[in-house]
Length: 98
Image (tube, rainbow, N blue to C red; front, side):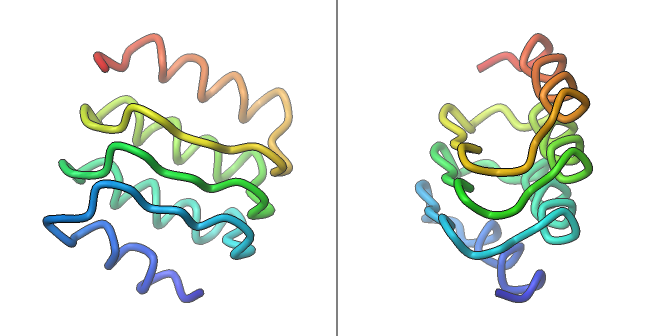
């Protein structure tokens, strides 16, 4: 799935749930997704399980969580996230108001 396509989903004003399980998003697309997610105000559930996302992608998603106030559920199971990425996500959740 192209990076532009993924981020375009996040601009749809009526989209509240997005399941992208098993799309091999990887770090590069996760970074794009994280950037778009920072400004999204409609997505409440995002499933990114089994997408080959590593620490770099997790850090971008963590940064998005610092700014996004609508996302209530994020599934990152079965990815390649290690300690660095998990720490970034954990720190972001401490600052998230949702």
